[in-house]
Length: 338
Image (tube, rainbow, N blue to C red; front, side):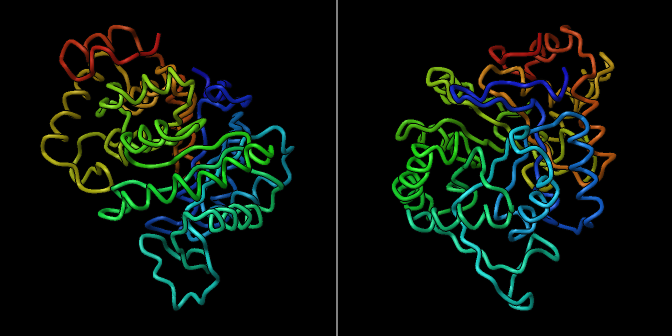
């Protein structure tokens, strides 16, 4: 598979590359990435034919949007697809007054949740200013899930399905954006949103992977029926499907449990039997589903990025997927690469 392969974004007149560049790391999550490395990664991705870039106000308190726009502003705008998100309004502040965790040396803004109509419109316009570009192509409502909002989720979801939905729907009707969606960590929230509103696409982080396929029950079939696209982020489950079952491996941003370590170790045994790198299997599996046009991956170095790109084209024999299913390490109904 070529990472620069273009796939249609569901029913929308928009083609996205199979690999998309995720910008959370260049927002300095957990540790700092210098400007040179940030620019070099985006240039490397561009040179490899990658034309889909995903960012958000949350990533580094605006820093990722600033860096993304700076690196892309001299590219031919019609050659790329850009997505960002609404749900947080950023306000200028002194660095000493900002709680950056888990970001490091990030933008000089504080973040405030706002899913009202006016707050969504402001967040959208502010993102364009930080990006320094005339438009974004896709806009997601960000983090209206239980993972982020906890006990407030039901009320937050209701507000977003009113305020943010009305704002983004109006922008889509006006042709300001081509596609609107929801970006969260739970497929159940995506399904609830699609059942209530006419969304084009979703950014689902970590919930359709080699380790998790519950979304095959109802959500992904609904997306196929409605021709709604699902862009998968967190396809390595925040680390373990890239690193393998080693000590300290991360699963959903925390140390992996013994049961997860054991399951990944079993998958690695099948990988070894067929000479398949675990990350290549994780990446190519996700893209086999007909509703998934693109896999978003964030990297910290040019070398990491090049490895991700190489995993796209690593040959994987059909027997590999058959063995995973025969050992109950993959659902029998999960689509696999042909």
